Image (cartoon, rainbow, N blue to C red; front, side, top):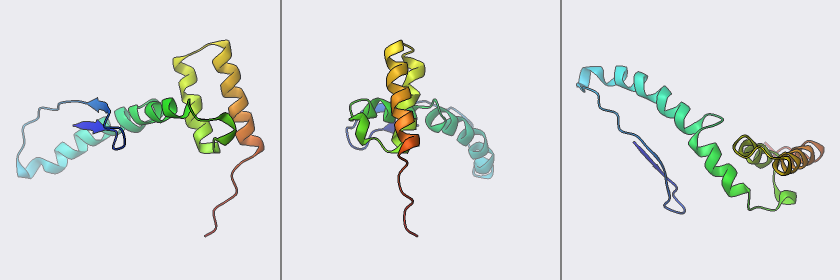
Length: 105
């Protein structure tokens, strides 16, 4: 398995899974691998949120949506400093004070 950023082409994650394969065991194999891959790639501390959070570090704080503010806050746990705490707190407080308007149905 390999995850590559479609825009930049950057390699984000890869892992090799060696398992015996038979057509009869395809669903068992899927049930075994999918949770591992999803948790590695997409959970709160996974590859995707970390990558997106790093990208958002270069975006102006005033332009972050509430969702982007939460993603940006994930980097705090990788850089626990007073300056990072202040920045993340400021970003999250702004997101709470000015949430995005609901999208029309």
